[in-house]
Image (cartoon, rainbow, N blue to C red; front, top):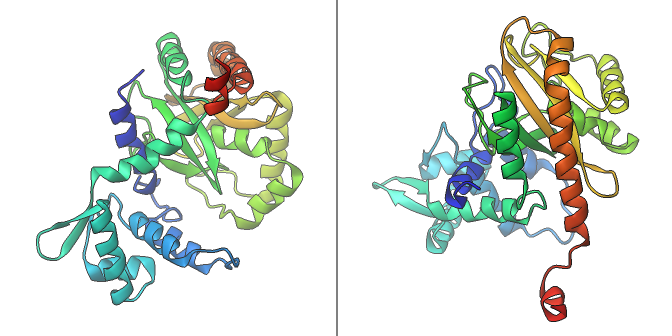
Length: 305
């Protein structure tokens, strides 16, 4: 398995990964604003939300922020932004750069690593993915859903695929990506309705499907056939084939994807070459998840040993 520090370094990019050309839907500023606009429940801890939104204000476009930058990105007053930045500095999550700027510290990586380390896939998915990449000679990834986007939690590239540079933690729209359609096909009717109510469907290429009725039919077909093929909808020369990864109860928790950077590839040819090995790898992960779900963990497991 790769060094944990390398994965942690990549994982933190989920809050700063660049979006596809022409897309600003996932920008840190808009995500922070959307978070502030949501109705609040009684249990909501406003100070915690402000601290997390401040961390999300840092990105690849703004790796260092001034007090004014931070206040504007988080929709807070300068006084509030200053208190939050100083608190994060006291906790070791940010530090000062020069007289006016703040930057994130490596301690932020612990937040992303906590998620990855808690994933049931984490213990055994990496070697399966490495073997799959070696067999196929293509970039392979595992993605999960986060709201209206997919997030790469494991990814092994053989070459640069998308122009914006996709890595662990990168976020992409669900509707125009094969892994995203696998995840959408795994939703129940209520969850899918909620997705369409919130998603912004916009074309990235001339082939991108953005008509809700047509997209619903495509998602239904994906669920019935057990795989998703998407070609030229994110970028003109990028295609992908994805299959579901399921928990022991059959619920889809992730998607296993192979990406191809090749113009003019035929769907039938790609499926014939990739599908058997993709499904075999997914089956291995499914079985490992099933076994892992039956293995006791924590203090109770130790006392029983």
